[in-house]
Image 1 (spheres, rainbow, N blue to C red):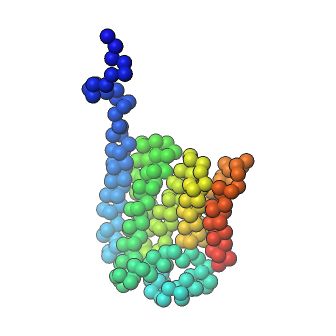
Image 2 (cartoon, rainbow, N blue to C red):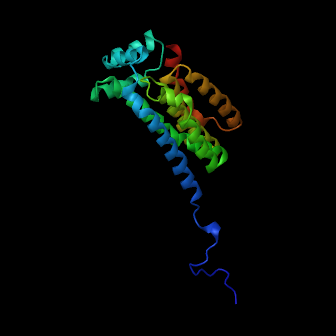
Image 3 (cartoon, one colour):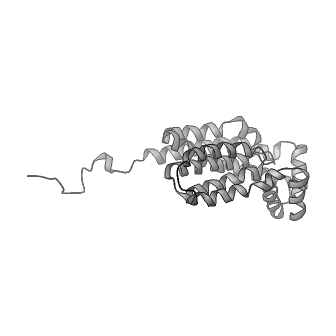
Length: 232
């Protein structure tokens, strides 16, 4: 008597069952990291004195939007995205602590992206470790409540690297376009974003060599959209 091809619904192979390891590691790494960050940062939002750089950031963000962009790009030579987000935040809550909470939000939002980067590179365990390392880093612990663009930059960098890895795996024009859009955020936040963009561009050109140029044209258009930041 043969049971080949017959399913009884019992005794299924362990390989046929969805593994719970990856979701558990994701919840553990991201959850523990978020708990660590919140425990460290919440008290600092109102507990630390306001620094001069935070005050300057808030004063610029409180200006009318056209004036804000002109000041940031053509007088300061920086990326305006954080100031635009700060402008929207101050429209809801005009206290300087609102901008610190904005930094906390992006510090927390970076953790799932760090987990996914680690997972794509080395598996679920590496993803959990990556999220915990990011959460316990002195960078996020110090700048997680600083009312400037630093945690937003960490979030955007993790997003850019994550989508770059997806585009590398799938080798499709739409994913290259998505990765390019994420990379555009970097110089829109801080001029030093150009370094990561240049590194990604060099790797992308190497990987895309010999392939048709047409599917990559939308991504190249996004690169051209970075020119104003370079000029500024």
